Image: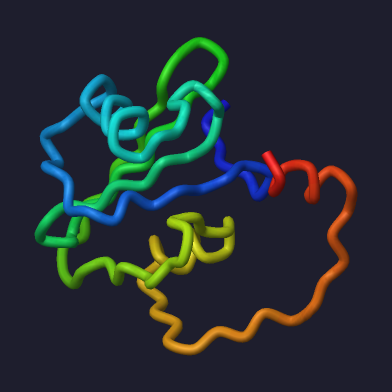
Length: 120
């Protein structure tokens, strides 16, 4: 099943990436430059220098899955992030081309499973 869910964590690599890179090179960036575990099931987001291509790398049960989108016109907007992580809704906005200048997150209930995921 190919799917991304809100239960996963999403990390954006802040530097432009050569979009010719594939599974091995991108997973090398995850471990070598981002200091993360590419086999964790988290989703790693890479944007090309021209900002018209995006790749998402994720490990599923039997191997890596690479999602790739190329825009025919326009560019992806790189959000300003403190820790390099995005929420699922922020990822959806990024992919759909919605640019949010000012965000104010309202207080929401955080369950025990969500707290343990953010602490990990």
